[in-house]
Image 1 (cartoon, helix red, strand yellow):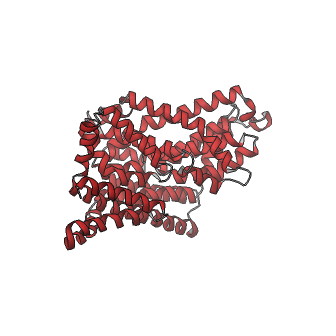
Image 2 (cartoon, helix red, strand yellow; image 1 turned 90 degrees about the vertical axis):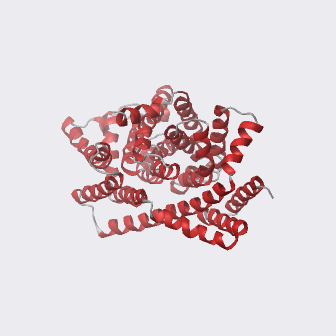
Image 3 (spheres, rainbow, N blue to C red; image 1 turned 120 degrees about the vertical axis):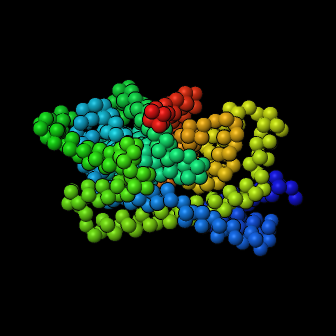
Length: 440
């Protein structure tokens, strides 16, 4: 059997196991180790051990549990509640203002968290009941929360970009900076859509009534203090790193400590909050580590088979495709996989194939990391099995059906495709800031 046929067999076996409902790391790791034993005999048994040692020596991996801890600490201590109250008061007079405030909340949470799941949980538990109570259209607000929560994997400190940087061997700081403008642009496009739609159809997002808007300016200014904590946390983490004061790992530790200080200042650092935060952090961190371990083993077998060179030859020589056509095909494959898998699974499955191919085609790997992340955002919300769709269904109240959730996302998917097209056509949207900062 040729190496190309073995590579295809491995990939198809892995996808088949994933469709049976097996855990992602189990399916990927099992195929990798089994293929290694069959190809190289007893020596192949060392593959899993070698991947584990490589993982344990991966110093930047220490950032992962720190960022996850920080996000859950802020969530469990209800600091997001204060933020939403601030956005609620300041944006309420605008038609669709509470929905715009929800997007602002999601951007703030993304800047403190880096995970879309946490943004979804906060949006569904804090913003969604309030929006429904204020008479907002349930389909509109369901889409707002799903779209806003997806910003968590693009705005720094994005955990997905950290994982991409580890697998693609790219600087995390440059990837974070590359995600800033695309993330803010995506949030701005969401806001523009909401404002225009609610202006044309006021019943979708009514403004707050005058009696609720009549809040003294002193009270409004007092509420602005709720926004100081996120700025403090974001600066203590990302700001110190970008100024060169701390390393990436030190920055993540500073962020984790800052979140604990913020919870203590608010008087919400209880044993229950600490226990829940540590418990959830361990669960998520261990899951990520198992997936990365399996991906390293799978990628090692693929490298040994020369599968990357075979795929490159197939696309360029046999099919005669150009670099941009190949790039578009890769992005479409992410959309397809996103119907069944989450962003981490997609990354670890195809990164060993796509990253060397993207580099061989002459594209910038920092820019491609942003494209991958935006495509994951879209795939998250693509029916029938988008990851965010079912998260939303699990957290939404009973009056919001799965059909409502499906209908809610189409306008926002269109907006995100526009954002993806803009970053694809104008790479400097992603690359200008890292070039400016690191080129000084």
